[in-house]
Image (cartoon, rainbow, N blue to C red; front, side):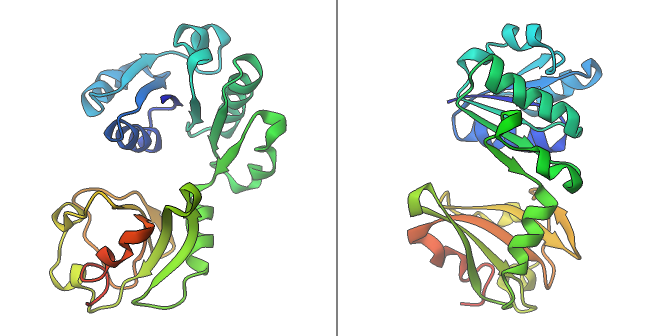
Length: 223
């Protein structure tokens, strides 16, 4: 799929890297010309374009009309709403996903602004973790891809192998069937990094193939 991401901050970069790894055609739109060279080195598989994603001419230039998905991931809610509206109303993009930075603005992110799905990372993770109260067990949070994938949460106990071995995320070498997508630590959402080490009572959110949940045992849960 062709995916256009508005915003080259930490959220946009994390999304772009993941989508490139999944072999999608990714274009990142970033208004700050001083950081685009860094972004091109950081995301070599993506096209990085210096432009204002809130301008129709810029969106025409990057081929917005051919996009399958647009992700408005800037740190400004007003910009994300404008990008979403233009993507849907001016260019007819089939799927528009928007980031909500301030939860007070969440009510604005609906179909009237062209938003198909809105995501407020702190609010999403907190609400998911609220559903998971049992330490040391896998709690199913959401079915994805028509039940073929699941989003699950594990609250780490002190005897979790990943803690006992003091492993980083990169050292875990999780199979392709599972991917850590977020960690909530002391009520703060963290974007997983290869060098991240895990702590007791971390809430680890994982997307995993439905038939491969057992891969979490022996890693996040004592076998």
